[in-house]
Image (tube, rainbow, N blue to C red; front, top):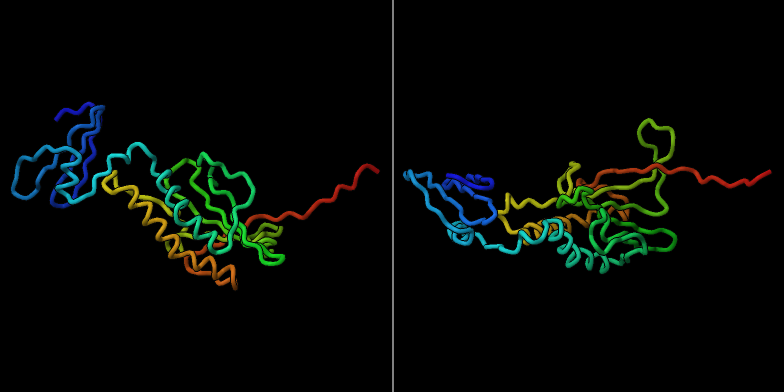
Length: 224
């Protein structure tokens, strides 16, 4: 089988799917495992129908990160606002190329503020992490470095893990819309752990400490 591009093989157990990527992006070969020496050729739409998968012809035109940002904008950002958070006037970029495309969200109660920031991967991979803290921060001692640290945490998708919320479409065999929805579903299901920490500093199993150095203010004494 001669291909002018590359071949992706996906083993489903019953079928061995060979996806031929080329400039024409034309055919897919499904090789039956059970009692058949020869396979059948089909188009991408035909493969989706045979495997009971929804076709997604527009997925190539948009990056997976863009799907993830749009799902967050559609569901999670309004949810934050419903919880009393407001977007701060900072360096959020509308083009989405920033690692903090939504900027910072702040909820103020008297002299204390709750702060949340959604940080995307700096290499534009479809994943993000949720950073949060209070302002002014709780000053803690961390490690062996002899200076103060501000208390801050991150929300992770799995307990006691440093992994980020990420999309996995399994080489395009799953719709990016569906994957983005599942990631945001996971985020919203775990977000009560963040609210619990803001309320009484309860550290849930999906939270990890991520302190930052706090340096004392220096006064400008001026020239003698």
